[in-house]
Length: 240
Image 1: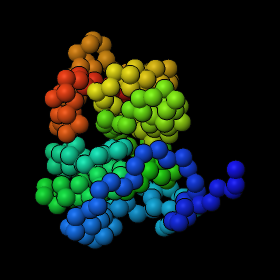
Image 2 (image 1 turned 90 degrees about the vertical axis):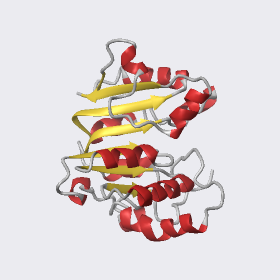
Image 3 (image 1 turned 180 degrees about the vertical axis):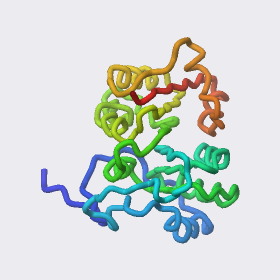
């Protein structure tokens, strides 16, 4: 294999699985990406502006915020925007590499008008690179790509490669939420996280994983799962 070269933005090569682009964007969506996204991008996360990966204090982006939350893979942004609207005193950082999803989220922000969201249109690992220890008090991983084939299970986001980083950026007492309608992904997540000493599963009875956390606003993925007869599960872990 030849030498792996950096990306055009200066970032080193990393394995990335999944789509970055979908259907051609509408004119207004492209305008939001060109004009609004730079305003909402958290400074210092993009490799081009922070190639030495100096730590970023996300709390400084909203000094009055009582907490800082992170959503990894926000899809079309409906959960992220709803949580921001319901918690105006919390700063929410969302990351999503799929450009079409980012455009959908920007449209939702434009409609709903929350001012406490910052968007990183890229890999969540770039957040890991620069976040301080204990930077986030809630972390959401909602309906991640299940990668159903056995040979692709190592691509699943919840796993040994990412759990040490999630543990580091989670503050003591922080909650890690995982939602999925794929039973094998739930099993996989439990097998990955429960032996990990930094996280404690909060469930005491079946209802605790059959019902979403109390402020769950729902998502289009959840609605689709219910329409198609699949039962979502909701896992919450606390950072010890």
